[in-house]
Length: 507
Image 1 (spheres, rainbow, N blue to C red):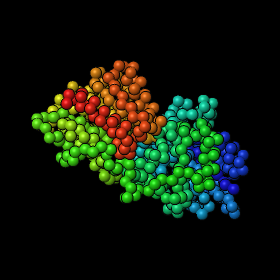
Image 2 (image 1 turned 90 degrees about the vertical axis):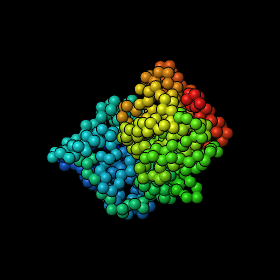
Image 3 (image 1 turned 180 degrees about the horizontal axis):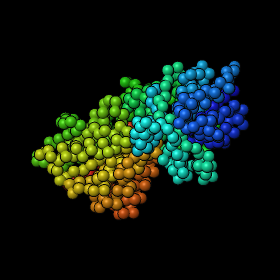
Image 4 (image 1 turned 135 degrees about the vertical axis):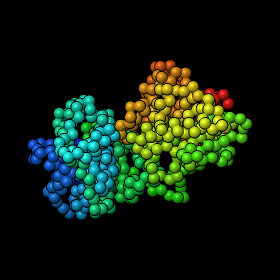
């Protein structure tokens, strides 16, 4: 028998588990839901006395009440914030826990408070500032109103009646639960783990695997054989939107099923470090600061194409994007056709870093346009993947020297899983200011649905305002196809995109 202990997230009480718990018990499993102090039922103490340790004690009490029994496996399930008290409790009762399930949650680390997982950067900053005051740890974070839940995660799939119940039963979150650091000894580090990712918010197994490939340190521990993953096609509250499907996933997780990540292998490079799909001239780079120039064998000042990588990319990842074969390939392809190819490293390491990345792009453009080998009046910008949001500045106020904006497999609206992004970086809202600026979008047919939806949103807005958009469709290609889909269709799409951009530069 499996004994599931279900721990809710911020503002919520055990009622959210009602339907999922009923389906688990109907299959013969034992289910216990945890009421976290201060967020369900009568308050046992003032909010300013409730902290993360209080919630860890709440989970420990349930583990101890279940007890150890031959043939019984305890599976701890933590949704959202609930993973913090789950990990704290598992660390102290590791011998009683058979598996930990991260349900659309963050990845808490020893010594880091739950505040770090709050998705809204502005709110994180506000609460961090309050924590530094004399009475900063007192009080509560108000529960969301009905239309405020999206600030905390995608509500896609949640029926209206369920959202009404969620709002009616929501309780304020004691601030000390978010401010107290999680303390872990490592006792539970070897326990089996399952991650359940909710796709509507933008998370996916593919995204996690790419983080592993990029060398993100916090993800390397999830490549072991005892770690599995599942995906659900819904928003942040699957117990409300897909309760039956969630119950089935939890049962399968308890049985050790699920997708396993692939650890980096030097003999098989990850997708972003594989060779570019085209043979390009071996043109050397000229490096200045965070910018690389690939110069053509041509007389006089030449137009330039600046290639902007996506992200967020882990700050510790090596090699950095301007040394990835794909970016180098695009820059050399451009230089081989008579224009200056430019790559750069920008500081998009977190969704809060979009303003920093925008500063880096502006600095590169200033450097490039001042170079006497560059025709500063003929510049194109070409964005990739998550760098697509950075288009917004140039759409909103296109300078006369910007002759074209291009984007390949772009993300063109913020993905909820990554957290809120500054409203400045919303291309669909900025495109109405683009005027006659030519736009070239390369769209892949095998895109992740949540990213494809952002492209469609942008194209709809573009059509509504009459923007000059050309779409290059690559029906059988995937995201980042330049190093993974070595097909003639993909090669033709890259050549098509380059010809189009160069035509707008009058090359």
